[in-house]
Length: 539
Image (cartoon, rainbow, N blue to C red; front, side, top):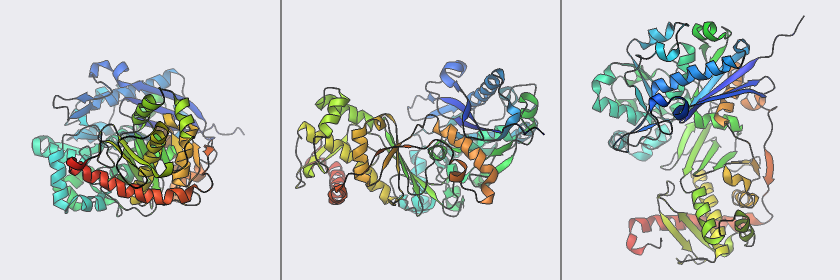
């Protein structure tokens, strides 16, 4: 008797600039990849970088039908390449976080009865009460953010409930703006989806529910109780709970794929749709973070993903529900002054050479003889400061450093601020902790050595090309067995592991412990100076 054909699993990523898909087999090998670039392949929508930036420079949106047409196109590309959809056992996906989609009254009936002879974008073209969706780049809801924080008793109280203070891109504030400016549009909206649950709805042929992890980036979900917060809902718009539907665990099987895909593309009718999530949570799954791990993306801006057991919501950073373990959390910290600042200092003191930069960096001792620097070319998110601030070992402000001190002060400072603010959110360094480094600077072993020394943990590098896509494919497999208490780690243990590149040097922990305390003290001094510029030491 012949063995059954090998199963495939699909992971989709509805990101800002493109729609991507990955197919993996039961050995977790990538067997197919495809994508549609919105600007290049769908020029009729007139986007730049996948978005429309409005005249006020604050409002940023993307056309809903562009996302749908991209799905039509990527599935046709897969079909033309001979991809066998009948082997797909489960699929999941990710969407850019904080974007929202507004379905018209009656849209659910259209979704349930999609005619297989027409494209999705033709069938669904009149299903949305708002044709251009607010996305994560939008910053037009300052008034709504202030109102939401006031309604719940302040920014910290909102963070305690929802994991974050009010942010302009977060969905609750976007809904509040739509309700206040266009109440008639809000009234005719039958369902509000996130980009992730909207994408899942397309495959399900019914409204997909919002998962806990992406839902915790809305300023609406009580992150500990995993339910919508009544006080937050009421502060944003009336009757909102009904329009959102109940949230679900991230590994939830939502149902089988819609008959539309069975008839049009040859999907197996038993193919399961696992709840979609946000792109950041999906990346955590793709990087295969475990408890105590930290992922650091060292790119244009620097981003941290943290696995946290006991969260401590703060005014800086975000706490989200963990996408692969219901009782855990993930934290997200973003720092604007990443590689651009590293490149600026490199150009100033090492004539544009990373080789010279690294050579100078290794010529100085851990702790930089007590010299500390803060380097913010643009207004930083954490802490909210700008300029360059230098302090000697006695905490005196100084106008300049020698080049070798400058380079180490920059790199040590960038990593100390990350460790300190991660610990503020509840991150704890465990004996099993690994740092998983990605992004451009993760190719520089000298920089990674300082990362290891500051964090007191080994540093590994991982190939995270399409990590949200890959994480979605992993989650598709996991979703089929999650209810039997099988962990994602068990599912993905066959996948290629990360590479060890740096171990903490002997004796440096004793150097950095007092330095971290001084850094925290001086950071507050820098913030105080920002409020009282007459005493500032910034350039």
